[in-house]
Length: 221
Image 1 (cartoon, rainbow, N blue to C red):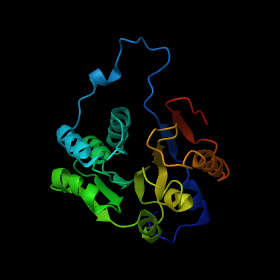
Image 2: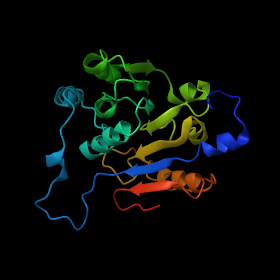
Image 3: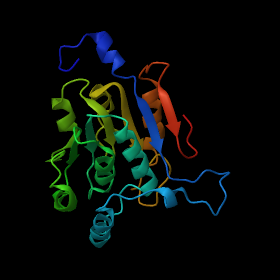
């Protein structure tokens, strides 16, 4: 199935994905004393990465509940090929690696060398990980069709820019994951208006009816 020579039917099947709007609101009916994160073991280097992230003043890192779900999804794809668009300082990267088996690989792409350097310092020794300093959209457009079991689009490319390019590289039955679909205090001016445009674009792509949805938070698509 790999490569550019797929039939149009196979390319269409590449849209059999799981779209996950990852939000970190607790369930409204959960007891206030219950914290599901009490049962989650963090990746071994997470605390060090978070400390460096705070020193840098980088405020766009993934939340713990997002990370825990990423780890679970990565663990479901033995020998999988994974792609992260938006390394940041490597917080979500660490969660993905924590769920991956020894035969899996992860490529993580970012344009900011200063923040990606944190990921390189703490995670660069993991042979399963390849860190790429490149524009995400340029990277996507060079990739063959249907090569990744999971794509976490945590940057403008692959989500607000080049959506079709990103969906194209996901394998049939793979995961296409986006987060930050509810208002965040660190959003730049005008960003909120992009959300309904993205949701509409996804709804107009003609994705198959057996598309799975997992919605954590108030945005139910």
